[in-house]
Image (cartoon, rainbow, N blue to C red):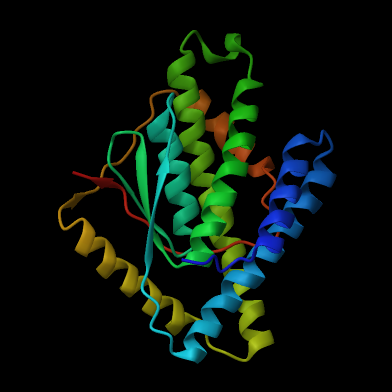
Length: 236
């Protein structure tokens, strides 16, 4: 299916995120990611409204995404939180693979954000000296990534609410019913493909790592424009 984010926009967003990941200046990174998010939000919300006006009846799509070890479950937590913030559901099969359900523009936003925020999270995690882990490097890093994911999810949902409010004002359209309908359609598609799902909570055992991860997420460059939605945890 043809992308809802055209190639020119995707290229611009990728370039902005790459610069945000590589710069050593937080203010510059913040401005770059904010611009990338602004572009993504504009196209994703605009695409949803355009489809509604065309009454296109588009069906939620599926995409498969590999999630590499180590700390695959913690990385899936980050992916799921980004999905929650972008009207995308994430099903993890426990074998380093996730299935994403959503509409094309939202799926692209999730993939782009996940790639960038995973780089930021990993870089922040590796900057923590090993001596600060109390000799429990694996537990520390797992807890770090889980906390990072949860805090990023909070920030993205807050940003989505603000962006959606601005879009409603600009477009003169109530967007809540539109996205509720999209969530219902996605739920139905997930149930169709995975009728037997279980939800698994991920626990942490290193509270120092959890605190460090949450602090890193507060510093992460997500910009001022975010996206919102729902997610799913684990397939049997």
